Image (cartoon, rainbow, N blue to C red; front, side, top):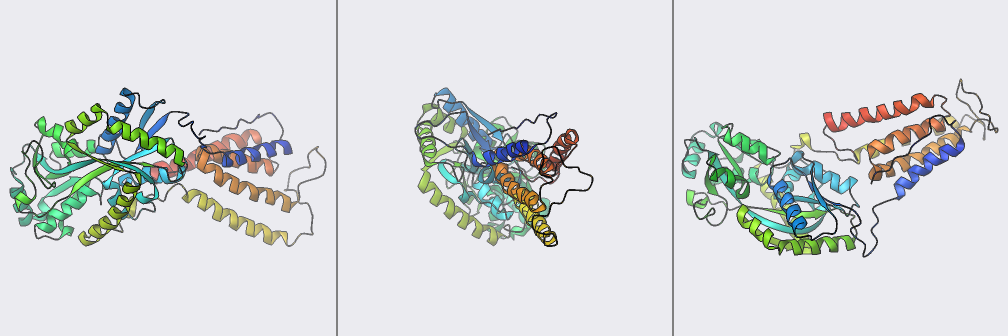
Length: 465
């Protein structure tokens, strides 16, 4: 939702204009993505990929888009956009907070996110969403560059046992399923999981470049991601974490290499926590029709993915069990917890901070007001009464109005976003304080908002509403 208020720069600051600004914030806070029964969807749909382009989540989302579009399964167009970072936790935070009630956006993610949110102590968990459907199961494979001296998994493990520090492993985000498999391999080889030199990548494209360029010794990913590279002769597949051989029976299992390890990946689709039930029923029906399309089944075969369809309630129970199991495995391997250097604090950190500062300011105002007679008016130094009559606004009334605007601003953040709500909030405060330099206040409000936005999103890597 995009709401922009336009102010006439040549119009004097009147109480009516203050009411319009405050009313606009109230309208923004109260307005939401309401969905009338039987009318969903009313506008274009989106698939959020909480990772950079090129990886398994991105591939799945774009296959979904292609099948839905080609089969004309949706009356509205559907787009795909990426919001990567912190093993998917940035995108997850966006879905759980900013898009909390948005029925038009689904997130495409998988088991990697379960592990990464636990290992990074993220304030958000996958179980906070509305799981709609598990779509696929994927076999994990261990690969090496074509020019690697290791022709078999047994040879790689032997070298790993001799000198663990000489073997650099890579894969998806820290704490994800790829990282877990590397730890399990080390454990099965009789080594401590803390000896694994693991290089994490946030996108499949980066991981592919690293393995093909020989920057790492071995890499772990899904068969669907590595198979095209293996078929083209860029990498060599040594083993799979699947219970049976994969790749037309040519890729042996880890068990065949003497490692008692079995681990598979999964991916699915998640809705925002506050999305209305009628919209979720529509999405569930769409996903069920999509998976029955012949084109979808053909894509799964081409990618080496298995149809792992699991509907809503069953999938939600599965997610809760996965979080418990993954937390136990990560703790045992020494991977879990405390890695949250890049964990997002989430978009609500800013509104909470504003609320704390506002409470402290109001406490100070209340203390100062005690020294004034009831109803006494205090005009800021240098400001004259306007021509409206009635004198300056009493101190308690002025700050009371300011206190009322703060929660409206916090509510508006979740619906119109930081970039729209913040400059309006700053201008509302300026008007309330009878600013006589509105022509300078407008660019200052925009500039301050832009500087804070750049600080959080570009330097601190913290998502804002």
